[in-house]
Length: 113
Image 1: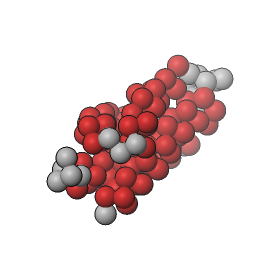
Image 2: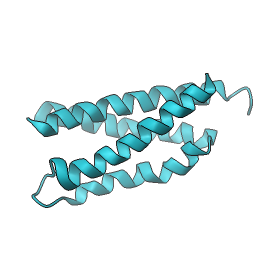
Image 3: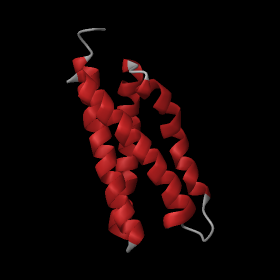
Image 4: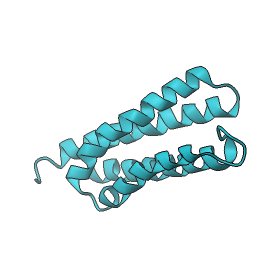
């Protein structure tokens, strides 16, 4: 079960990083040609190495970080239309998957720590 949580967290985090970059650079940027909002992927990228290596502490703090991406997805799903609204829905789904997997991994790996 720990391996499944780790795999789900790793995959959803990597996909969320790619989504943030693609969304703000090419798919539906706030300004034509891309926007500085693509930098929102940087905090996620900082946690990627710890998530891939199975560091429990990274799972703990990144599960709190991901809530900001969930909130952004909810706000943009509500306020945007078209492709940006669909991308916000994907952001919500990926952040929920990551949060659930990160919490599960942290809980399941507690006995080993």
